[in-house]
Length: 456
Figure 1 (cartoon, rainbow, N blue to C red):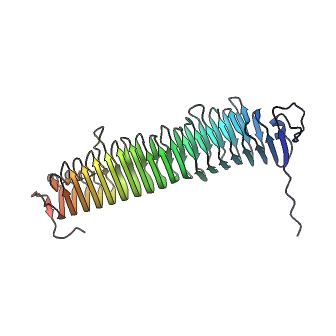
Figure 2 (cartoon, one colour):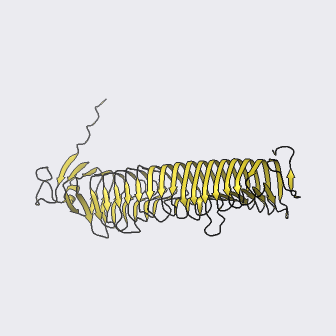
Figure 3 (cartoon, helix red, strand yellow):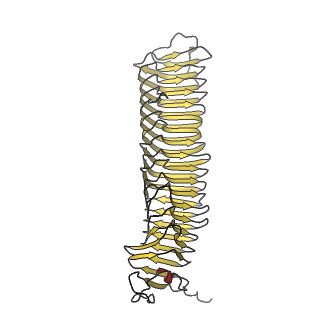
């Protein structure tokens, strides 16, 4: 068997913008212009850049490595791309400044300690089918409305230890990536940190803050979130149609509208925390299939949890302090239509009812403590079917539980302490209450029925 052919040697070239012309690219006699080093024929070349300003635009072909130092700056005027990377190209410890676009990659691009600033439209564009590995890079916006990292369909990307600063319209914009991984990365200032349309993305150990739009937006794609913290923004997470979200240890603080807004999506969270959300609520679900294990919602200027149609499954839930600044109700949970299964629930200090089921919602609540509910502990309204078992209401300015508007309220092992009665019903229009083991007794109303055995 013949011996394998030896690997092609790497051509080492040195460039220094401060030297006189006429060098040969060796360490003692470096070239002055980077363009001259990039056109030297070689299957692979490593170009060492001394500190200085290198004016392009540049084209780096397959097999090129650019290695800078503390202040090796690649720059170009507005209207052009500073560096076109074709094939397998790597950049290490360089600064990319100016240009309409910083770097455009069409193959396998590797960036290490690369800093971008001053671009008009975006720092980096990776063409469809390319790959990108960026480590400890910085993307700084000097003008608004740009996209820091734009990814075309089919790319495979890993961003690790990177920083996004300034008013980018989007930190990362990805259309149907094959793989997108963002780890140990911080976003401060972009309107939206990640805009994902199709494909899949995984975020881990990511912090996002000081932006105006939804921090994370996904539609028709799959988004995985692991230890993600968002401060400010319109939403921490907002979805479009056909999004799939898997999250663990996700935190939203000071969202302007809602902490998490799920629209026509499928989502599963383990340990979701929402603090100081706006009038659109803490967790907002619209026609979605949502499951959360370990939900904490606190200090919301609206609804703690809202659902309109779809399915909602919650286990281990604490909702505390909801307000009613605009007349929307301020309920701890407001469930309209759809189905909900809620277990191990605590709701405290609500501006409205602790839990309202309405518009035909089918809700099952078990093992719950409802404290300081302003209008009532439980409300079944407008055709809703609310079954509650093992529920205690502690302190309400209204009754412990209310049925009205053709709602069906089924109670089993229910007690109300310091309320205006345990149960109240408005019997017109088909409203019904069925109760077993209700502490404090039932009102003598035609639509209220005491059961001899617990309901099935």
